[in-house]
Image 1: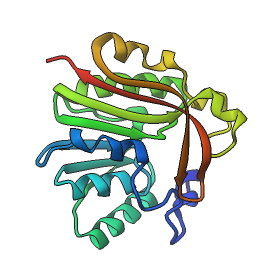
Image 2 (image 1 turned 90 degrees about the vertical axis):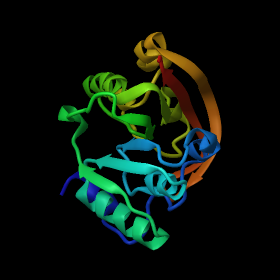
Image 3 (image 1 turned 60 degrees about the vertical axis):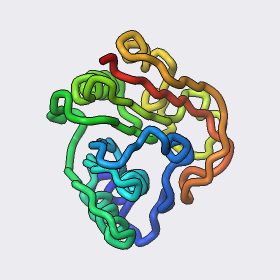
Image 4 (image 1 turned 135 degrees about the horizontal axis):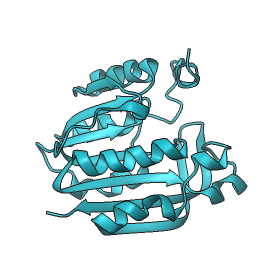
Length: 199
């Protein structure tokens, strides 16, 4: 079993069943009938919430256990997800396919971060939005969730190439309070970014 399969292999939703607070604040971006991709989406809490907004959701994760839990959560909530077992190392990103892509606490080694940024750029339709909240390197001092390896955390530089090619709608580098399941709990150092692909 992979690390993530092990982590998710419990009845409890380890990051909770409610969406990430930052995603929820962006509810106005997600219009009914939009096609949205949630990457590294774990147990599906954000994907299910998006589906409840009337959005058509594709969900990618590396853990089949996580995908199965997402489908169970969706069923309980009366919505449908399109779940796909995807390793972002060699993901096949479709071109101009999505109105929005979300990545909430998707933490990857540097080479994967770069390919994800390129993939997001490719897969968004012109005018589409990329919405992400991730832990910054400053999070190591807080210890309230996220990876312990610096390489898996983010700096503003990780978003530089997107910022060059996208219109930046929102950028935040600082601390927030997060209470999202047992594993994300307390004051947290995050980076938030919303970019719009140019028309």
